[in-house]
Image 1 (cartoon, helix red, strand yellow):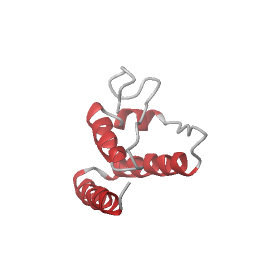
Image 2: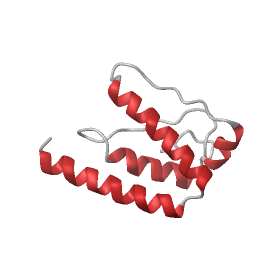
Image 3: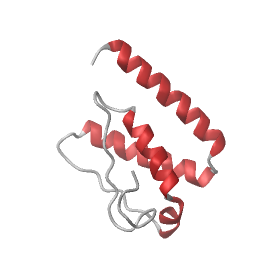
Image 4: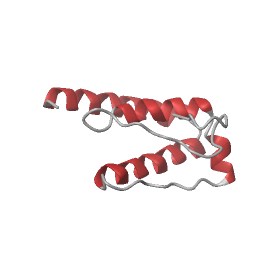
Length: 98
């Protein structure tokens, strides 16, 4: 990874987060931040998975569109981006929330 690529991805992530802060409702934005914190833990502890339990309300907030936003944000992380796998009955129930 070169520094320019890292800086551009960081800039894109910051722009996207700023847009989401104003476009998402506060509950959804808080959930997004909690998930991103979990992704950060996964990056820091590379050899372990991170399990984030969702409350019933958080499951409602995790719509297919929310999953697409999360997938886009995860693409800005790590040297080659990250793949986010959502299991269980989140979003549309397909397990492919992003």
